Image (cartoon, rainbow, N blue to C red):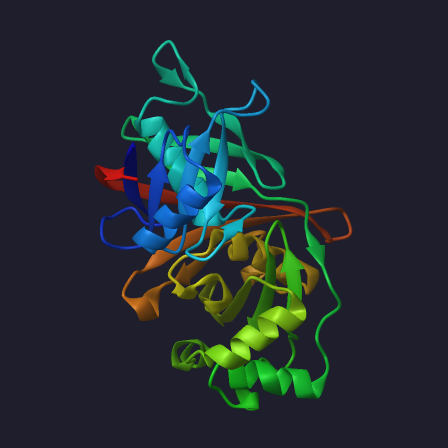
Length: 302
């Protein structure tokens, strides 16, 4: 069986940066095990497989795989898949024009995406993520020491005022605030300790971050998913927006901010986050936006 694919670099506006993604625009005929085998063979952080939607009013159904398993969804795959599907002319065409808003089906339901044209083509996507959920902040001193050890850092590298916390907008993420950008850059994943923490806390991603002026510097470690480090993680950027809104710590007090990720990997990525809040300042939703650049196309024999 011949399977056509397209790759793109996501959360960047230039090639050879951001987070690479493989997209199969028409995955009909592939089994779940076949999709997993392709994701393992390509070995990107994620690969996506597009199928007809269950609801005919939706644009398509997206299945997302990391090298070791299927996950409900992820940020850079959702952005990249929409850019690829638009470039292939497979979504939202009316009289040659591309609709500005679509709904796509992921593992937990439908996500709303805004398609943004640049120079006549869809290069940028803004997604509304799932309903925010969070657990109590982690105040236990022994557990905080485990966090520091998992990152190869001293306990003093953890932020003095902001606690780690599990937050989700679809994927459970452990937000770990650090004292400085230098601490973020110095972190080295202790994989056995990280794997243990991910299992104990039932999280997919450990997202360490620090304030960098009016921006955020971040890194994502997710070895339990077969991704030692991810250069751009939209599904963790959304939970970080929720976290910062919860703690009244949005950079500059603005609901919109930018995350720089992938710097230490030589894959600089830029993720725009907008936290939505109610009248009391509590987070009610989050939107994540970024660009993508098509890179390669080809076929696999499976």
